[in-house]
Image (tube, rainbow, N blue to C red; front, side, top):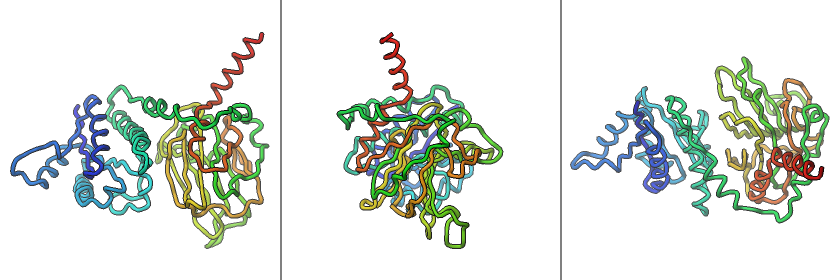
Length: 375
C-alpha cells in the first residue's frame, strides 16, 4: 500500500523540506509530494496544489517563525481541513505554539515539536531530524509499515562530543532513592533561585505505560506551599512545582509526561510530552531564568517545550519531595528509582549533556566490574 504525503512549507524552510522529503523517500511505501517538483506548463499553481492534496492521505505542514504567516501554507492547511479523508500532522517550532491560530492551535494535540536555534543551524537541524523521525515512525506504525527508524543515532553521536566538566563529581555524588525510602526524602527547594537547571534521573518501568480506567498522576518530584482551599482567584495548590507522569487511559492512550507549576493569584504553566517513553533511565530537566524570561522542559536533553517566565512559585516554606506528591498518597507514588536533584545555578545547557552521558545503570555496572577486579 502506497501512502502519499504532501509537504507544506515556506520557501525559506526548504532545507527542512528536503530533510523530510529524503526521510520519506527512504521509507518503504511512503511517497512525498512536493509541488515545486511538479513542473507542468501553463497549469496554475493553485490547480497543482489542489491536485497534489487531493491524491494524498497525509499532509505535513512545517510551521516555523518563517512560515507561520505564509499565505500558501495556511491555505493548504485550510483546504486539507475541508477534506475528511486527509490526516494533518504538523511539525511545529516550539516557540510559536502559543501564537498559533486557526485550524492548528495549542488546544489540540501538537505532538511533533522541535527547538529552533537561530544562531546554530546545526543544532536546530539535529532537533528537527529527531522530530521528523518520530513522526515518520508513528506513520509507519499506524499503517503497519515495518522497520522503525533509529532516532538516537545522529543525535547521540553529535551531542556526545560536547563536554562541559573536566571533573566527574556528578559521578561521585549522585544518590539514587529506592521506592521504599524515597517517600521519606525531603529537600530544600532549589526553585527559589532566579535561574538554574534542576534535573532528576528517573527509571521508567512497565507500569508507567499501562492503560488505566482513570488517569493517575505519578510524581517524580513535587513541591507546594500555602495549601489552602481554592477560591475563584487562587489555585487549589498555590505555589506548586512538579514533574509527573499522567498515566494512559482509553481516551488518552499515550498519557503524558509533564512539567507544571503555578503561583498564587495566577494560572498554571504546563509543558507536556504526549508520547510513551521506553523503559529504563531517563533524564528530566527544568531550566528557568527570570532575567531571560523563559521556562524550558527537557527529556533526555531534548527540549520538549518552552514558555515565558510566568506562574512560577513565589513562596517556599515547604520542602521538595521525590517520588510522590507531598501528601504521600500512594496513588501519587512513582514507584521506581529516582535520583537526587542535580542543580546548576548557571544557565548553560551543556551540563544536561554531561548528566545525560552519566547513566545510573552504566555507573552501577562500573561499580560491579570494579569490585570484581579487586577480588
